[in-house]
Length: 190
Image (cartoon, rainbow, N blue to C red):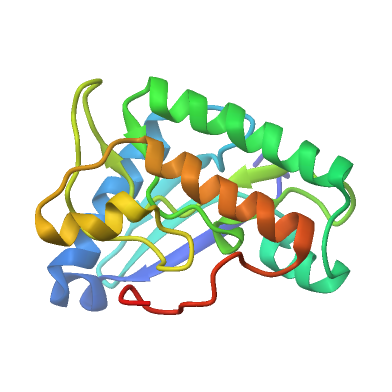
């Protein structure tokens, strides 16, 4: 025993196996988090399974979601925003160098290491994709309010690249500064 505090994500196998997409997302998340190591990305420590459940042991982010911190404060100062965005840019650069595209960057998927300060970790890699340097994607996914226009256009067969993560991070930056999203549409069609 190390005495470290950790978070444990418990996944009901019966729920996952009934929904093949959830199982695939879990496998992708496992694969990605198992191979990345960066201070701005949540770290997976272990995965255990028994007959009914998967247990994913992760670093504990005591500060909760960035979303909740923004709601609590109303918005961040420019300096606070800069601290958050620089960490996330470094994490995204690392991911993109590894051929990984997150595809669901939003304040709810950014965790704070502690109650004080702004040490952030990118989390929730369920929609992430491992791609080659010249690979493109065309699956419509992500959270509509944060998704890049080229992802929305993918419904018509258009392709997109890892740059969609930068768009989403720009939306997060806007929300940090102003306390609300830049767009009001809540569905893909809006």
